[in-house]
Image (cartoon, rainbow, N blue to C red; front, side, top):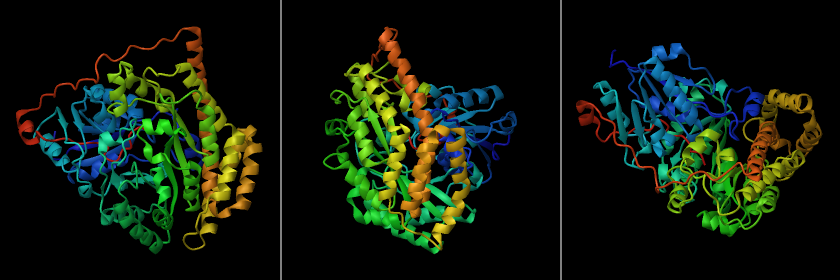
Length: 566
């Protein structure tokens, strides 16, 4: 083997189709194969030596073949918790093909014990460390376990991702990343454990160079800033947004933008105006619960002492629609939470509301507390990976409330929120509030022209394939077109998501009904609890003397831009 010219195959594992976020029907409407490309892997690709040959296979968009594995000297893979099952399958395929595997990413960093069979297990962020991995590999090391110091990566050293490895037609949108980390301390979240509470940001020049590269490659359309909280460092984002708006304006707004932010975005009108000027059109917000005691207990105080409906309405007034996350299963829920949560979704007029069960993720404050209290299932981390996402993986601990009551609440919320009349009613009310601004030359005509093909597909699916939706879809579409034509693209996106979310909610309800039936029949009992506060870290793997000497402090993360399961 020529160690100087390594052939590296980057493999992005499958997500479960049965996930809130898979959006398979929406991808079909827009002619895409999956939602987004593996930003972490293509960022890693840019850190590898120029004389290495690099290929990418995204198993969500294309097949991994025997010929791919036969070509490779090394497979680099990894990802998030919902990809764990397929990550292990990729490892198995590589083992059969005799190809060594280097694995990392947020799931591996949080919970490495599942991936011990990989030749290289690397934990942490890649910037500033990947060169030591390369040196060790070229020196002949073929096994090793390495771990970086937490939150030490210099993101200003992160290169432009290898966007040219992508087939843009495969994806609904393309991701970029401005910052890592979040200043808040939500108990159930693993972001602060992976990336810290002091958000680190790229420079303005870095971000504009990434957009320049995408523009030069011919990409036009939806770009998602994958930051876990874009406004976590307000000073930095306020320095960047005016330059971003100017860049967009000079090029006649080639991109529409989305991101994730905390609800306190609504408190800063200047920030809202800046995002509007840059052409952000959607933001994901973690609302979690309408109950203030629950929010305080979960250390999500930024959501308290406010009207959630008024906060969301201010975001709508800035031209961005909101998608939101809600959680059922907190200890502090007094009695049924279903009515209050359903009302919260309705009064905030958020069509796309992701409602999940409280899930103890590995390496979080929540999982550590539940372990100390003797309430964490012994195989709590396996339950998450087996289920696919937190909609069915939750309650992997012994709750204080009746498990049956929590599951009943959860089922009722899903039923009420995704009842077609309620969903399309929220879309109509959104049309009354969403104040999209015009961008570029003749934006309405261009936007409508680009919208025609997906619109006809939505019409077909909601009239012919799912005719029961026609009586909800057509009045909502006509209302939106008359009431708010400038926001029609955003409104159709919301309507199109029901093709997936309506079906997915029914899938989850069937699973919850099955669990309730098991509880009622006495066939379900609480699994064994963890006997120790945490899974002990396995001992380091042996590394060759030369590689150890050169790479002792090495760690590399294969998914530097990955968003961990929340």
